[in-house]
Length: 126
Image: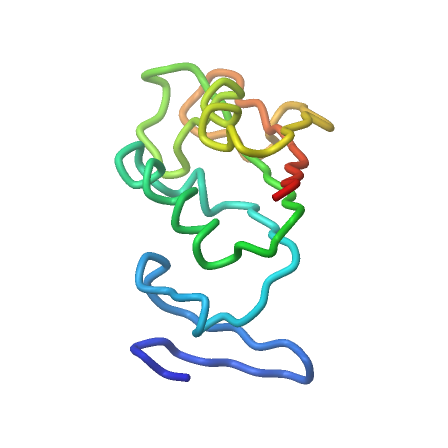
């Protein structure tokens, strides 16, 4: 399984470190669920548009996802992390049932202003 990826294993867990957009379903194997703590917000808008379709292509069986995003006032910080508001989340994951489960001030806010951290569950029925 190399394909330009560094592979780390411990027990039942294997991590493939490399270019996300070069990742294939064959490299990662079956995925039942996704936890995104900082992937979406690490990407500028032009890459975020590619992120969700690629994620679904490599993890088509993943019926559930836990997604954590940040939102901050425009112009207050240049990122990464980038601000991703709820409207963008819902548009990007339109094929999922998106539920906001919690939100609050981000304790690591940089650049001034109020940063909001939001946590969503996404459920896919297909």
